[in-house]
Image (cartoon, rainbow, N blue to C red):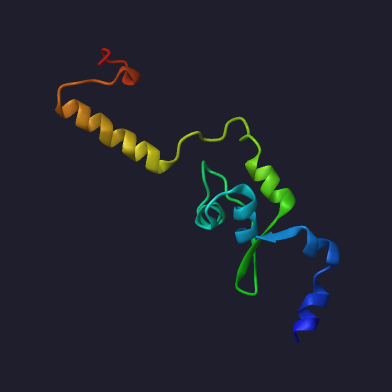
Length: 107
């Protein structure tokens, strides 16, 4: 049965796929980072990936495109960053300080 599955995937397509583990080694990143990019995404973009036999793979062209500079108009901050910024603003306000980024007097 294993030979049948492999015959369904062309040799050219198989060569263009690498596992997330291999991609992480090539990029000198933790494999968890690539899994997060594939599952959750970052800055409004997700890394396209395929789940084959319980392993997650990425096409080299998709990885290269994902790593390229973000397109114009894409968000530069994510929800977690906005939440942290809001919490920092509240903490500054509790001390009677205002952030220069919010139009207040410099700290």
